[in-house]
Every structure is written in structure tokens, then in C-alpha cells.
Image (cartoon, rainbow, N blue to C red):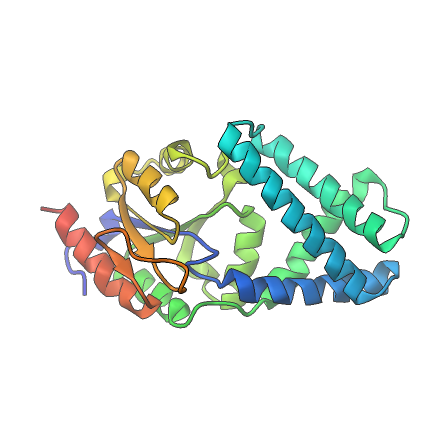
Length: 253
């Protein structure tokens, strides 16, 4: 394993596609959404699940269009609008009167607190590899498009939250995960030289943007949809500690 001051380096984990399987997680979310809302507000569990599913598909498509056209708004404004629309769209779908706007964030974060620690969608090997990398002496952070509170919940459920020093989603730096400014904002917030950063992500566009600011990158190719297109990559998360060692050795030359 790494023997040359690994504590000089920090590794940044994306979540979906790296730590957790989004397909598996999505199925569990739908089930637990119904289990949360139905007893509390009425309606059938499947209605809440369907309403959530429809809205997420709609907002994802809209987000991608705005991303392509460069029309993304301030992240905090986007997130507030996301919660408003998520709550109202589901209540409208089920046909139940919606709670007052003042309660929307409270509902959202209560849902996150209940569901995220109970999701079981970690990729094989990821929990052990996180523990190994932490024990080596690297500093661990997230660099995900998800809200930091969601990230904390998933990591709490995986029982590795204490391995991480920071839980970066767009909310902590008020910057969408769209280009290199996301990584710049995180590295600046930590006070980290980008040459000492190792970013692991599944999507080439994010790895390319991390490279633009000088970070080292590793691609996670954990599903059939992702083909390796970078020098350093893993097909199984158990391979990550060894690949991290290779990256650090090269960076120190």
C-alpha cells in the first residue's frame, strides 16, 4: 500500500455510479416514499411512488436542457424551487391538499433523514475500500451533485460516515456540479492544492472538468453502461486502493 505521506492527498468520491447504484437506490426510494407519505397524509403508497417517479423524470430532463443551454440559476434558488415543485407535484398527483409552503423544507429533510440511512444500494466492495483508504491516511470527501444532507444519510447507512472529513454537494459551495468551477470551489474551500486531489467519478465529463483544474482522476466503471476512457480506472471498487497508490506515486514524481 501507499507508504509516502498519503495524508498529503485527498480523495473525492462521487456518489451515484461510484458509491451507490442509482437503479437499485431509485427502486428503494419509490417504495419508502410511499411508506412515508401514505400513513401521514393519506392516499395509496403506490400513488406517492408514481408521483415521485414522474416528477424526478421531469425535473431531470428539464435540468439537462438548462445545463446544455447554460440557463442554470443560483444553486440555492434552484434547490428551493426543487423542493417546492417536488412537494406540490406529488400532492397534486395523489389529489390531496398540499401543506403550506413554509413546511416544505421541513418535510423534505424529514424524508431525507428517514430514507437515506435505510437505503441499501452500495456497490460491492465500496464499503471496505473506503475503510482501507481512510486507514491509509488519505482525507476523504464527497464531490457529488446531491445535497450534503443526503450524502451524510447514505454514508451513515453504509456505516462509513466517520471516514469522511467533508460532504460536498452543490449546497456547500453554492455551485452546480456542471463544470470545473464546482471542483475549484471545493478545493478552495478546503485550501487544497488541486495537484493533491484525486477525483473518482463514473462520468467522463466530470473527470475532464476535474482534470482542467489540475486534479488527478480515476474513472469508476462499475456498470455495463460505462466504458473506461481514462488512464486510471476500476471495474470493481476493491481495486481502488491499489489504483490510488499508483496515482499518488505518479503525482509525486
